[in-house]
Amino acid sequence: MAFQSKDSSSEGHKREQQFAPPPRQYGLQPRQMGRTMGRSMNRWNNPLPSVDFSKTTQTKVSDPGYPEHTISTKGKIEDARPVTVTIPEESLLSEVQELPPERVIPELQESVGRGGVNRKEDVEIVQYYLLELGLLSETDTLPQEAGTLLEEAQIPHLIAALYTFQEEVLHWQNRDANIGGPSSKTLEALKTITPEQAKAQMEKYPAIKAKREADAAAKAKADAEAQKKREQERAKLKASQAAKKKEQERIEKLKNEASDQNSVENKLKGLESNKEIAAFLIDYVDHNPAFVIQAIKNNSGWIANENTDDLSFAILTKIGKSKLGSIDKELLQYFRATLDSGWTGDEELEWMQAIDRVLSGSVESVGLPSENKLDELMKKERLTPEEVKEARGYIEILDEPKVKEGLFFLLQEKVLYANQRDNISSGEKKEGGTCNLTALAMALSYLGVSNPNSEKQYEDALEDLRVEKELPARTTAAGWGGVAKELGVKYEIIKMNFTGSKDFFQNDIKIKHLEKGHSVMLSIGGTSGGHIIRLQSINDSGVIVDDPFGKSNLKEGSNRAWDRFNDPSSEFPERNYNNQGENVGEDILWPWEDVTVHKFRWIAYLKIMKN
Image (cartoon, rainbow, N blue to C red; front, side):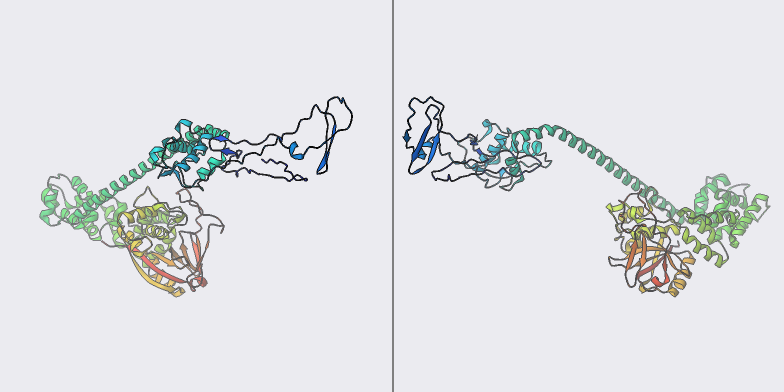
């Protein structure tokens, strides 16, 4: 607002004093200024006073030193004679009073509220604003006798009012009841907000508070459920690990069991039939074949009217023909010899023929037509680790080397693709570094190694195992290689820091490793570090790989490029088991012209460790 008054100059010099409202902040309208400490200022909105000549005649006023003024009245004229009256202009303005200057509110000097000592002058400034907003009562203000420096305990009502202002008026969740000096946002808001606006904000607060409390309760519930789930998973993992450890200890005990005549006889005492003995010996078949052989030899010594061929038949029946290929060859030969030692019935003859097929390397080693079972598996586009293991068992017993090599090579392309973009272990975010364990998961799958935790994604289960065993970082060979070793798989680096060549991949890698049933992993270069993939196959066109991240293209030297999904500009999804995306990294062909100019970091093979 503004006011103006005339001074004694003939032109009427203007004098103005402007009061601009403060800027708008916090989404609220500014209130009018013009405050004093303790009361509202006079806003000077009344018009200037004027001289009242309502009962005078029309008079011409003249004076040599002043401009001429004409004054009109409404009264009757008794005497119409002209009268000349000299009236100085200052007389006309004699009723205009000079207004006192506005009292300006002092600026805050230091902080006010919680967290330190307060200056009395600063406290009074903040009190003034809180009083105007109705957040502080007169009875709660400082007494006149208060000292110049005030402790926090001396201004409890002001602190409470600041809490209310920040929480219920400004709707701040993080409130501190402190004004941190003249530039404080709380102070700026106090200066800006009107009582009406403050009231409106406070009326909205209960609904806001209720929503916040509901959101907090929902979050707390979700956090509690997540924590409970994590604890259950940890407990389940711990129980699984304990069971696995117990089983390993049991197997180790079976392996180390003495297989001399007396030891075996002592173990089997009390068993009264071949059926009972066969049930007892079934675990020894896989882990201590010598113990089983000695048990068959000793059989006639403690069970009357029972022959060795009867015990062999009972054990074989318990094992089943489908598992003959996994039995120790020496034990199979002993089974065959005992079955053929006496009278041979049709059932025994069938078992002898099945054992002969296994020992001769026939594809029909499991007692079933191999062209049915193995062909059934090899016709599938993709195989689980368990199916791969079964197929490998059939291939292993084949006698023809070239057939075995061809089937092992073909089996490489049957492995399920693993995508690192949906991994959630160890707090992974977008595009995290889990290519190592994801490539390892595919390599282990080809070797027939099952996921150690079927309730989790394979590579996430591998990361859990690495953490549990306190192995080095997964980005190192000691890290991912240590995980492989825990699962009975050994790795060996074939070559490091080399430029690819067709001869190397065709002869050293394909013939010596892919056709021998080994898994192969390699690391390619890049400006942001290496990247690990699984090598799947090699043909006349180039090298075929399964890249866990996406479609990688080799460049000259240590460079590479990516085709992310089918759209280079697309964003990767958040890591979630449900966000696999397109498996564009599967069956990628690197042409020989790219392979032969790229510098690879390393290449390694993996195979099952022998007991």
